[in-house]
Image 1: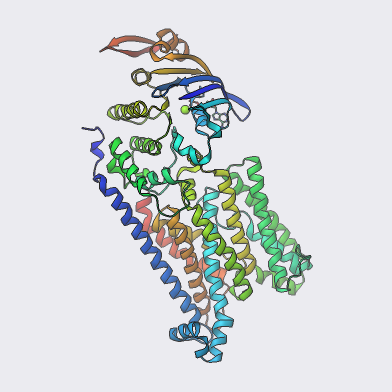
Image 2: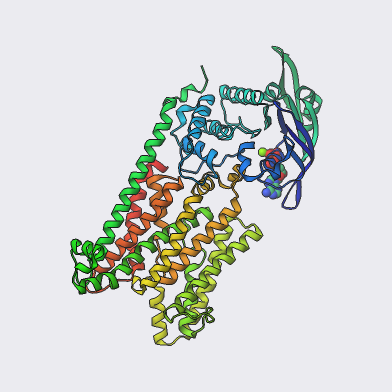
Length: 256
Length: 360
Ligand SMILES: Nc1ncnc2c1ncn2[C@@H]1O[C@H](COP(=O)(O)OP(=O)(O)O)[C@@H](O)[C@H]1O
Ligand SMILES: [Mg+2]
């Protein structure tokens, strides 16, 4: 369970994220929505431990910033908007071993690392990529690999920054299905930045809408994404129509 | 059917055995390079003004009492310190270059990127021209005054740059620029010292700056061995973290790697090795740039293997350079720094061209 109280992030003197409070329950997925520059990535980076934050961010009752270094990897899975690991001449399999053993002092990786690496590749259906290097892969394949690297440590908190931006239609569903199943089955908290509002409606139990670094609205995704609010925040008229038992959001035109 | 199945080519259980085959392959490459090193060192011991046979070399090393006294003297008192210095310094410079490339996140970084060579030169100049030593309070033998001064100046320079960068949160490319500025400052001061020096001092200084193995001796071998030898196990323990830093960059922090501290520790190790080697044998370029790339091309980025191979490549190249320096002009020994560049560039180009298809 993730709980934020008055979390703020400053970058080079200016406040990019201010006073964010939210709660993601065990087994829940929350979508972090908002326009470009709203501060979504900044918030996620701060929670991942890459930027300092003010306020309190508790994971299962423990302050995120105070997690002991040795336990970080086992608590946090983070997929960056632009994942690193791309320049490295390491195979996907080597990266999966590295992700589990990055603080290891001994020589060989433990036996279970191999098993977990195999399992996660199988779970995501990318076993065929094991011997490839990330720079030989397509953008979408890299996003699948980045998710594998985040999941292989079995995190309690999953932070995904636009995880589907380069995926084809099938893989968007495949990746988010996997994330949803993993989240529910293990009772973890997942916070993901999405731009596709229909995917957010489909996969996020709850959503937070950021504007200028502040929470504009939060709650059940259906309640957050109303036509009126989309017009105010995005400046786009949308029709919201029920299709096959779900809400489909159809953007129509820019507001004048 | 999973929508990603179209990627599938390798069955699941194969990924592990593929990895293990790769590991065996890398270890084999390492063994080959270490053997080549040993062979090159034996050749280096054999070749000189009076050439010995390999049999004599091995005999003289293993059973010194059973060979003629003059062979024993040539081997143990003259050639062995030089050969060992070449191997240790080569390994140390190569490791130092590799660490600098990682810390500064720059494939063109090398041991002298942050001004070590100019700082060492200036330290030496102070001792040679002005007989001034920062170590005057220590009862050092005369031969160590120049060396000690050079060591202290170069090490302090890098430590100051590192601390300044950590304090101000400078990005790696800014640290490189800072290093270049420091390099020019010391070069200017070195020039001033040269201007004020008399003819003998000037010659001593120019010769000192030129990398040469002839300045070594058993005491210096011991010092280099201790410094480089101490760095090796530390790097062994840190190798997973260094790989994480290379693979994930600052995002390694998400996995609990203390990125800032690791960078600082690696910078310190790199500076310690480069400074001590430069202070002992002068400026030997190119090895620190080339050897890490050779190693990475051969075994990739897993630092458990690539650091070990980097050290082996460095030792091999400098030992070969030592052989070369004695054989091009019979009777004369070329300064080693000159040779490393001549020898290193074509080899590097060959490797580069051989791998271009895989990289781009
Ligand atoms: N290092 C930085 N220094 C100052 N401002 C930054 C920095 N990084 C991002 N910003 C600003 O913070 C705001 C939010 O950025 P970001 O969190 O990346 O937005 P997004 O919601 O699109 O992910 C943007 O206006 C951006 O210009
Ligand atoms: Mg973003």
